Image (cartoon, rainbow, N blue to C red; front, top):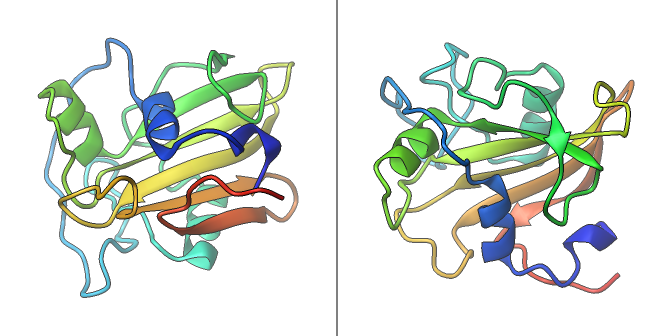
Length: 167
Protein backbone atom coordinates (compact mmCIF):
# COMPACT_ATOMS: atom_id res chain seq x y z
CA UNK A 1 0.00 0.00 0.00
CA UNK A 2 1.28 3.49 -0.74
CA UNK A 3 3.08 5.25 2.06
CA UNK A 4 0.40 7.96 2.14
CA UNK A 5 -2.06 5.34 3.34
CA UNK A 6 0.19 4.09 6.11
CA UNK A 7 -0.91 5.31 9.48
CA UNK A 8 -4.27 6.43 8.12
CA UNK A 9 -7.24 4.79 9.81
CA UNK A 10 -9.99 3.77 7.42
CA UNK A 11 -12.28 6.40 8.87
CA UNK A 12 -9.65 8.96 7.84
CA UNK A 13 -9.81 7.82 4.24
CA UNK A 14 -13.61 7.87 4.31
CA UNK A 15 -13.40 11.42 5.60
CA UNK A 16 -11.09 12.32 2.72
CA UNK A 17 -13.78 11.27 0.29
CA UNK A 18 -16.54 13.34 1.89
CA UNK A 19 -17.71 16.49 0.14
CA UNK A 20 -17.80 20.01 1.40
CA UNK A 21 -20.96 21.87 0.42
CA UNK A 22 -21.88 19.39 -2.28
CA UNK A 23 -25.29 19.12 -3.97
CA UNK A 24 -27.84 16.36 -3.62
CA UNK A 25 -27.83 13.09 -5.55
CA UNK A 26 -30.71 12.11 -7.76
CA UNK A 27 -32.12 8.81 -8.94
CA UNK A 28 -32.04 5.42 -7.32
CA UNK A 29 -29.66 2.50 -7.41
CA UNK A 30 -30.61 0.00 -10.10
CA UNK A 31 -29.87 -3.03 -7.95
CA UNK A 32 -26.98 -5.39 -7.49
CA UNK A 33 -26.20 -9.03 -7.87
CA UNK A 34 -25.93 -11.63 -5.13
CA UNK A 35 -22.26 -10.76 -4.68
CA UNK A 36 -22.97 -7.14 -3.76
CA UNK A 37 -22.58 -4.08 -5.93
CA UNK A 38 -21.74 -4.75 -9.55
CA UNK A 39 -21.09 -2.79 -12.70
CA UNK A 40 -24.35 -1.81 -14.33
CA UNK A 41 -24.87 0.15 -17.51
CA UNK A 42 -23.38 3.51 -16.72
CA UNK A 43 -26.21 5.99 -16.72
CA UNK A 44 -24.50 8.39 -14.34
CA UNK A 45 -27.15 8.51 -11.65
CA UNK A 46 -27.71 4.77 -11.32
CA UNK A 47 -24.31 3.26 -12.03
CA UNK A 48 -22.97 0.95 -9.34
CA UNK A 49 -19.35 0.64 -8.34
CA UNK A 50 -17.70 -2.76 -8.87
CA UNK A 51 -16.22 -4.82 -6.05
CA UNK A 52 -13.58 -6.84 -7.88
CA UNK A 53 -10.11 -5.47 -8.64
CA UNK A 54 -10.07 -6.24 -12.39
CA UNK A 55 -13.58 -4.87 -12.93
CA UNK A 56 -12.83 -1.81 -10.80
CA UNK A 57 -9.66 -1.05 -12.77
CA UNK A 58 -11.55 -1.30 -16.07
CA UNK A 59 -14.35 0.89 -14.66
CA UNK A 60 -11.84 3.54 -13.54
CA UNK A 61 -9.83 3.54 -16.77
CA UNK A 62 -13.05 3.86 -18.81
CA UNK A 63 -14.13 6.82 -16.62
CA UNK A 64 -17.29 4.87 -15.76
CA UNK A 65 -17.82 7.25 -12.86
CA UNK A 66 -17.57 10.40 -14.99
CA UNK A 67 -21.30 11.22 -14.83
CA UNK A 68 -21.40 10.96 -11.02
CA UNK A 69 -21.82 14.18 -9.06
CA UNK A 70 -18.32 15.61 -8.69
CA UNK A 71 -16.13 18.56 -7.93
CA UNK A 72 -15.70 20.79 -10.99
CA UNK A 73 -11.91 20.53 -11.09
CA UNK A 74 -8.92 19.20 -9.21
CA UNK A 75 -7.74 21.12 -6.16
CA UNK A 76 -4.84 21.03 -3.75
CA UNK A 77 -5.12 18.02 -1.49
CA UNK A 78 -5.57 18.82 2.17
CA UNK A 79 -5.48 15.17 3.19
CA UNK A 80 -3.02 12.30 3.02
CA UNK A 81 -3.56 11.62 -0.68
CA UNK A 82 -1.10 10.19 -3.18
CA UNK A 83 -0.97 13.29 -5.34
CA UNK A 84 -0.62 16.97 -4.68
CA UNK A 85 -4.07 17.52 -6.25
CA UNK A 86 -7.34 15.56 -6.09
CA UNK A 87 -10.88 15.54 -7.49
CA UNK A 88 -13.82 13.71 -5.87
CA UNK A 89 -16.67 11.83 -7.58
CA UNK A 90 -19.60 10.58 -5.49
CA UNK A 91 -21.65 7.52 -6.39
CA UNK A 92 -25.23 8.84 -6.23
CA UNK A 93 -26.15 6.72 -3.20
CA UNK A 94 -23.30 8.28 -1.25
CA UNK A 95 -24.06 11.76 -2.55
CA UNK A 96 -27.69 11.44 -1.48
CA UNK A 97 -26.72 9.99 1.89
CA UNK A 98 -24.28 12.84 2.55
CA UNK A 99 -26.87 15.43 1.52
CA UNK A 100 -29.25 13.87 4.06
CA UNK A 101 -26.55 13.91 6.76
CA UNK A 102 -26.94 10.16 7.32
CA UNK A 103 -24.86 8.65 10.10
CA UNK A 104 -24.44 5.37 8.19
CA UNK A 105 -24.29 5.23 4.38
CA UNK A 106 -26.24 2.53 2.52
CA UNK A 107 -24.72 -0.53 0.86
CA UNK A 108 -23.55 0.37 -2.65
CA UNK A 109 -22.56 3.92 -1.66
CA UNK A 110 -19.06 4.81 -2.72
CA UNK A 111 -16.67 7.35 -4.12
CA UNK A 112 -13.80 7.75 -6.54
CA UNK A 113 -10.96 10.10 -5.73
CA UNK A 114 -8.86 11.01 -8.74
CA UNK A 115 -5.22 11.79 -7.98
CA UNK A 116 -3.41 14.45 -10.03
CA UNK A 117 0.14 15.66 -10.45
CA UNK A 118 1.26 19.21 -9.80
CA UNK A 119 0.15 20.38 -13.26
CA UNK A 120 -3.51 19.86 -12.18
CA UNK A 121 -4.38 18.07 -15.44
CA UNK A 122 -2.37 14.84 -15.44
CA UNK A 123 -4.32 12.15 -13.62
CA UNK A 124 -1.87 9.89 -11.83
CA UNK A 125 -4.25 7.43 -10.20
CA UNK A 126 -7.32 6.75 -8.11
CA UNK A 127 -8.44 5.80 -4.65
CA UNK A 128 -11.93 4.33 -4.63
CA UNK A 129 -14.29 2.71 -2.18
CA UNK A 130 -17.72 1.09 -2.12
CA UNK A 131 -19.74 0.05 0.91
CA UNK A 132 -20.68 -3.64 0.84
CA UNK A 133 -23.19 -3.82 3.69
CA UNK A 134 -25.61 -1.58 5.55
CA UNK A 135 -23.25 -1.46 8.54
CA UNK A 136 -19.63 -0.32 8.22
CA UNK A 137 -18.27 -2.54 11.02
CA UNK A 138 -15.32 -0.20 11.55
CA UNK A 139 -14.44 -0.24 7.85
CA UNK A 140 -14.61 -4.02 7.43
CA UNK A 141 -17.63 -3.73 5.10
CA UNK A 142 -15.98 -1.33 2.67
CA UNK A 143 -14.14 -2.44 -0.47
CA UNK A 144 -11.09 -0.25 -1.17
CA UNK A 145 -8.92 0.10 -4.23
CA UNK A 146 -5.86 2.17 -5.05
CA UNK A 147 -4.48 2.22 -8.59
CA UNK A 148 -2.04 4.20 -10.69
CA UNK A 149 -3.10 5.59 -14.06
CA UNK A 150 -1.14 5.22 -17.28
CA UNK A 151 -1.28 3.33 -20.56
CA UNK A 152 -2.38 0.35 -18.51
CA UNK A 153 -3.78 1.05 -15.03
CA UNK A 154 -1.73 -0.57 -12.29
CA UNK A 155 -3.31 -1.97 -9.16
CA UNK A 156 -1.53 -0.89 -5.98
CA UNK A 157 -3.88 -2.56 -3.52
CA UNK A 158 -7.48 -3.68 -3.32
CA UNK A 159 -9.66 -5.60 -0.91
CA UNK A 160 -12.35 -5.58 1.69
CA UNK A 161 -11.74 -3.92 5.04
CA UNK A 162 -8.19 -2.84 4.29
CA UNK A 163 -6.63 -1.40 7.40
CA UNK A 164 -3.28 -0.03 8.37
CA UNK A 165 -0.46 -2.22 7.12
CA UNK A 166 3.29 -1.93 6.98
CA UNK A 167 5.23 -2.43 3.76
